[in-house]
Amino acid sequence: MDSSALTKVITLRCSKCGAQSASKTQFCCASCGAILEAHVNSGHLKRDDFDRMRYSRDQSIWRWFDFFPVMNRSSIVSLGEGGTPLIHARRLGERLAIANLYLKNDTVLPTGSLKDRSNSVGISVATELGFETAAVMSTGNAAASVAAYAAAAGMRSIVLVPNGTAMSKILQAHAYGATVIVVDGDFDHEVAALYKAAVREFGWYDCLSSNPYRVGKKSYAYELVDQLDGGVADWVIHPTAGGTGIFCMWQGFQDFLSLGWIDRAPKLVAAQSSAAAPFVAALEKGLEQIEPLIAQETVAESIQVGNPVALGSRALAALRASKGTAVALSDAEILQAQALTAGLAGIFAEPAAATSVAAARKLRECGAIKTDEIVVCNLTGHGLKQPEAIRFSKGDFKPIAPTILALREQLKHAQA
Ligand SMILES: Cc1ncc(COP(=O)(O)O)c(C=O)c1O
Ligand SMILES: [Zn+2]
Image (cartoon, rainbow, N blue to C red; front, side, top):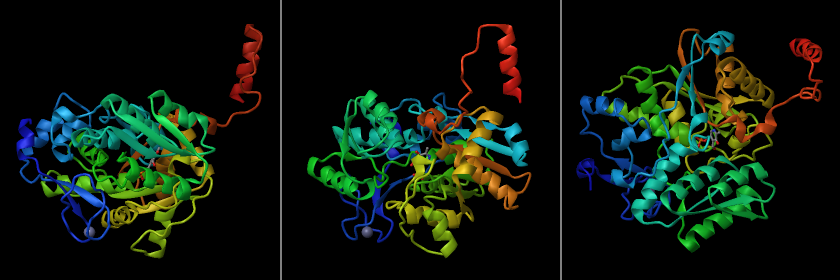
């Protein structure tokens, strides 16, 4: 046990009925069935601890070890996740009329998406609890991330995907050694039912967002405060599906608020595809709970979630508490934002990730965001995750003769 473990107390508690769980491996409350939350005592931390964490040599999320439900540093399974650049995107900001536009570039995370923040913490806990197999059902980024961290931990990983999932999505997980099971059934019902039953039957470590240990996205809040030099953004916009990002970021800002390390929190915004926007609908209707809906097809594949079953309502409460909002974006708006982010800021984000920039644009246009406010857009997945989303014309890559004349002609066309 290392020295911080001497002061660390980790408990699983029910946010609904307040019961504390006697088990470390049951993720639902034994009394009321609600999903549990992991609590780590941090009240003893001092301002000096903030500086120690900020200036640690390790720039990964593990600088913030004291806030994560992992007992021993020796259990950490890390691929260097976190510490991603916060870029002041001046040209893009000029275009959107947001002078202080910042991009949190999570496209550079180890497996190319934000899931690494969650799974580094989740899999580290799995090793402490003695699990040998990690499982997830996913159509994309989660599968690759769980597979990578399980590989690094020496665990087996099993991924359930519905029949029809694009090969490009399956291959990354397969490359890390995951056992990929393709199920003949639809994702939300049949695959979900089989997955749930299999986790129970085989005792796998469940890496869905109902797992209370997967709170690595709290690191967004910590990193942003650090990168804004102890300051707080006015807005943080997060591409939202299950709600883990919004829920965890809010918790992260609360951690710092309760220690007096910051004096306010930003407004949080859930950026959604209009084809799958349950947060937007819930806010518009003034609901306390998320109403599940059936997600339609969208170019923002990674956030095509109609029923954020585990954390939806808690994330909704976080949006409200932060005085933030949720914004729905059309595929056209998302693709425009993707192109602008690549062309004016030099970051190639997948369409789902670019919803944050599309939402910033929309909120600025309607006057909600003021011109000099600090706006952070989380870019949560790499563009190469979904290269087929990039539009190009038939003639774009036609070979030319190897002559200056032909090249000159081609350049003239390209300029036009
Ligand atoms: C690229 C990308 N962005 C954002 C999300 C949003 O997830 P959450 O709302 O759980 O933070 C996901 C995952 O579902 C994703 O793959
Ligand atoms: Zn309960």
